[in-house]
Amino acid sequence: MMKMTGKAFAKKLFGAKYERLPRTILLDVIIFWGLYIAGFQVQVAASVRILMINAFTAGVMWQALSSKDNAVELKHMLMLPGQTQEFVFSYVAALGSYTILTKTGLLLAVLLAVSAWKPIEMIGVAISMLHAVLMAAAAYSLRKYWYMGGLWVAAIVSAILFLGSRTWFGLLLLANSFIAILILWKADGYAFYQGESDKHHAIRQRKKASLCRYFFRYLSCHRNYLVNTAVMWCVAIVMPYFLREMAGLFVVPVGFAILSLNTPICILLSCDRDLEQAVRFLPGQKRRFCIPYCLFIFSCNMAADVIFLLSWQIQNGGVTVLMIAGAVFFALQSAVLSVLLEWFYPIRGWKIESDLWHHPRKYVVPVVMLLLAGAVSAWPVLLCVLLALLTLETIVLLSICWR
Image (tube, rainbow, N blue to C red; front, side, top):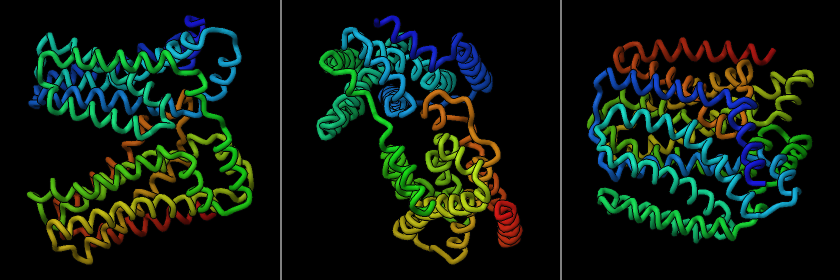
């Protein structure tokens, strides 16, 4: 039973012939070698490396466990006779392998290339990845008792920050991993199952209400999307502190560009196949969907930009009308580009929602915004001209969607 379940989920995640693994490993090797021969080095403390690997692996694992795309397979698997413990550990092993090999491997390649490592630290890395997978799965199975999970995570993060540089810290992670194994041993397979009622509820509501209401109801049904938005707001609060040394009018657009990296709200068509089928097959849906969707992303971007400007005023002062106009422009421009990417180039062939969150396409709009911010910083006199020209471009692109 355990072997059959693990193989079934592995084929879903890595492909029928595991063809995704060689491509992923080759990409990791290319990134590692490119950074290594570039000679770029960054001194990173051992505790910071351990925290990065644990936090990133646990976050991706949580996203994989939260993916509603696994609901059908889980429902069928749970109907089969077999031991609950075997099913739980095979399911966690499949998702954990996917997380480590396809996601954490990329982070590890970057860290290995840009920082110096001792051979003994590689053992700690392996323990950290295993620990993050097991702890995320155990905490997910106990998500009804979220306060316990929150205290558990806070305790581990504090231990990593204060004790992560100690040579015996790996033993503490192993002990915590053993606790997670005990929790998973007592867990039921249905603790990982999420029905599709939320999604269907949102789709039914879409038929009776406006698209704007659908967007906000969709977010309310996907709490992890709201968490990502809240994280971006926290980034908007602390970013002025780090930009203080470069304080000036033309460093602010860099903050606007960074705050446009809110992936979940920019992939609604890609992640909801039912919605995409409806808006593409029904007549006149390009105008009725794209414009409200653009305004929805604009409102989310603008909320983060407003928080950023308020924090800038409190910490550094000197917010001007031109900064406010820049916030409006960058929020609108990134919204338009995100909608156009979703409409003309939706992401296909993904296995679970975590693939959407980490797809390379998510960096296209922020990179364009960063290049634009760099151009504004280099030639500040051209700021107003660029704003006028690009605003005209935005109007033209919106008119295309209106037709």
